[in-house]
Image (cartoon, helix red, strand yellow):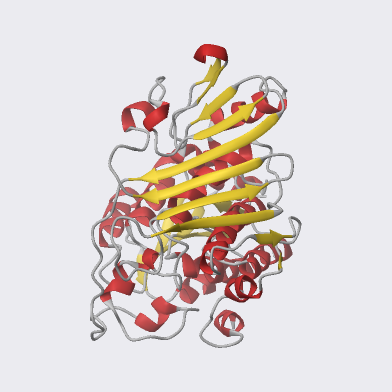
Length: 421
């Protein structure tokens, strides 16, 4: 077991904006942390993080393009995986197999099989894994769960989750072009089918099923679903899922819709999700609210959760915002103040590397929350059909097309095993 004063050596894999934020936060908010590598397949990324890290720790992290060089270094204790989503599972599994602990951003996986492999690899290699669903380190998320579990809200009747973001710009598909200098395009594609370089794929990867579950759904609504699951004491997967929607703002060439309405049959209650990218009258919780004792204006809050019990209605905020419970005539019954939990979440990961305890957001829960998003997308992609699901395994019955899509289209059979070798 590492002592609280032992040095923890990290490597960043995927040096975009979010990755740079996470690695700098881990370095700043916890003593004894050093960053030895910044890894990205694009030489143009990560320079800002390297410069800041150099100033903080007195030596420059090594820049590498192949994450396997990081896995081979015994000095590295843990990796931070902030790549595009199609790389989350291979990078996590590769790190676990190499004996590294892992912080992996959401959505942690894009299929049932990927999630199972991640869980198995982490367990077999006794690795600490923290998923990037930071609401699980928020004090108000714990208190909301305790309030519901106590019975004060009554029997849960229905749950409504929202991730209704402002609209995006019109998307124009660029023509294929030569690979930019300094980019390893084949490594960027990873498990996805080999295709010519295209700027629209590279820079707008969250608009393609091959690399993502969607910016609104997989990249953002995943937080709302995960927080709802935590508040409800982490139920298993739904028994059935139905998703409708389409493109609303622009009828362009994007794979992924900008409007999805999902209903999950959770057994004792239904859980619905509204995920969208249109309009500007809905907005995320402001920075002023996230770092203060105030609450959002719930009616226009884009990322709220509504939990309806027989004794009251709970509004629950994401990334700060807290929770409030209302009764008849909107009388305030109780509330819990909440703050943005990023740093707490990052400290929890470093603490668990040292203590070997389970993190606040373990891989098992990350896979279940990702599973709900993935099932919603599979319902939509298979013709907006109702999916029947085994809540314990995630297996789909009665829809061959959804099951086929869930297997993912890797470029060759056994790609992941080849990568790990």
